[in-house]
Image 1 (tube, rainbow, N blue to C red):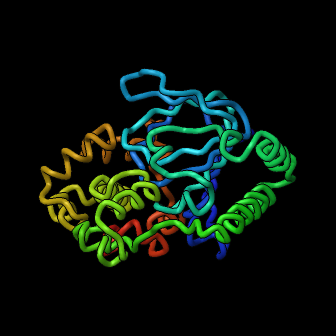
Image 2: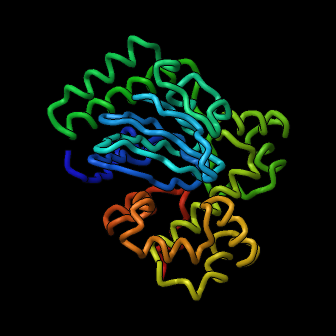
Length: 294
């Protein structure tokens, strides 16, 4: 299987809760994965993968299909030769719209998909995906499955508790008041939908925005102080401390490493022009578009 990557936008009906489909084929070796607030559904189409902490400790061996929540620690993903996978990235707060789970139960962990949807349904889904004659057919099949999941959840009043991204920076008591909830009730519902407390989600989104800036504007090294404040940090030192903890490297190290084509372990953080628009553009309100301003 030749090495290739495809980032595919969701159909219109899925766009409210799916960011995009990420497909990799013919991958081998190690990939660095920074922290992320976005839950994911994964399918290993070929080969296998192991997840390691940055210090080298084995964290888990991935199932052929799995569901992961938001991750608060960077990891290293070790892929067997010729591995291929599809990853479906969900929007923040949307996991309960598809599955009868509180997102915090999946924080920093991964569950086999058959533990969530049942052995028979998982086996049928995986078989149909593998038998599809083309990548387009696989994505279409997965899209239909996701729409069916969403349809089953909606009649039960299981809509996700989701706030517009700009409102996440309001005081929690004000958000609770606007939501018609007590503060404790608001905090519980937020944790169930987002997988982490409000304060941690704010921190995560600041980091995601800063990461987007460095990917989209790698020449901006001399403006890190200004850009850090644009992304919500108090100052450049605050940003550097957070970035090193959440990415496993400083912003300067990140810029140098991503500019080096020989650093294949950072392949997940390199995007072509059209991919940047899909991952960081205006359709993703979780990611401010400071990285696209002049």
